[in-house]
Image (spheres, helix red, strand yellow):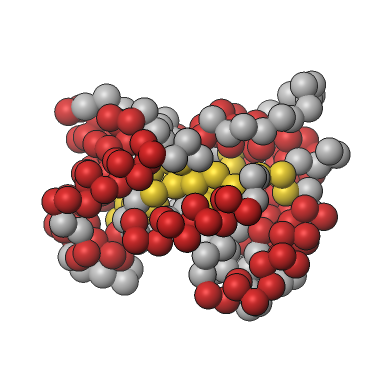
Length: 276
């Protein structure tokens, strides 16, 4: 296990993966991916996620409702998500949930649904997987208010595309920051700067497959094996070896999600990132 990678956000249940799932798994294993966290768009897809995890022991699960599906929320869904999370030991997070003001303008409804899932995560002692698009300032303020009213919730800002200043808001709130293929794009200077300043113990990598394939696969269907390219770019930006970056991010994923993964016992500390 030279370079143990963990892809912390996948959607393998999507239709475009179904014809060649076995080959996709072979490729992620060849790329060194030892574990994956499967996110959930809405609770109705959870049985399909469970079926995938039945086939592949390296898959952990989340359950929740995506902000773009907030109009599907009903009072019984909180109980449904809670029961699904409690009923399967492979559930390691609530989500993905959050705010998306890029594609939808039902802001109040999104706030209500997001808050309900924060409360579920708090009650169950699970982290949240947060989707945040065109809503960083609103998200940070909402979380600050929530922290004042209740105990903080652990979690990750997934597929992060914010600026360094925005990144700092969520680091101060205690969140991990997960980088996707976006960090490899030529026009992603702000995201690349953010990847350089996140503390080593708060850093994660993901694919968010099938979306946002990294360079050199941009424009193609994304898949878990490509998380290696994400890790390689983040390692390059931080001036460290891929092996060190992979081990650190995998340890972080295990810590946040309490994953059942055995990693090498010893690793050198990552060097400090220069600020000038």
